[in-house]
Amino acid sequence: MKVLSDRLLVVLLRGELKKLIWWCAWSCYEEEFKDMLNELGKLSKEAANDLPHYSPQNWCRAYFDTWCKNGMVDNNFVESFNTSILEARGKDIIGMLEDIRIQTMNRLVENEEKIRQWKDEFSPHCMLLYHDFRDIAHYCTVVFNGDAGYEVSEWEDRHTVCLESKRCTCRE
Image (cartoon, rainbow, N blue to C red; front, side, top):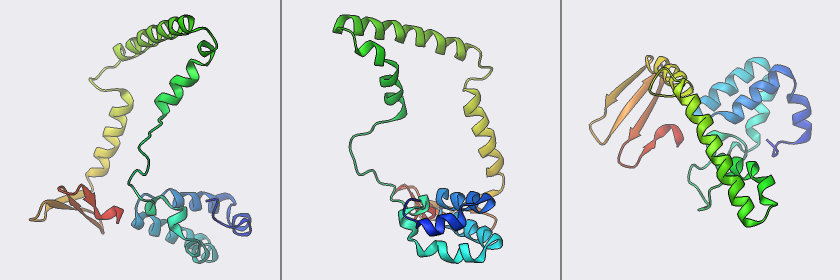
């Protein structure tokens, strides 16, 4: 969104318009982006006409390249761990390692207690996601296309999934 001009942001980023513009930016698929633009057009024709003039490849998730360009991967787990040992990092090496060992043991005990409270084999969060996606899947139909893939339809949206190349037309 930083690519968009200040003038456009001042005009557009108010209330419901702001929410719809962010939904456009967060759209994962080109069709979803176009649907969000249509919703935006119902609220403001000017906004829906002006927004695509700023190259969506620079600010919309649907147009981002999905291939990783960097071999180094820092994730939230590593960053969270590094944050949790900040105090220990100021100590000598033996003291630091001892603090990290104790902290790790305490964390394992806490996690085990949480897991023992699960009613299912999977975490409550995973089960919630599973049920949500299962409900969405009821509206989809899957048809084998005769090649190495399937065609997935949800209402008027259709996408072809190629199993060999692990690609879907929703990301093209």
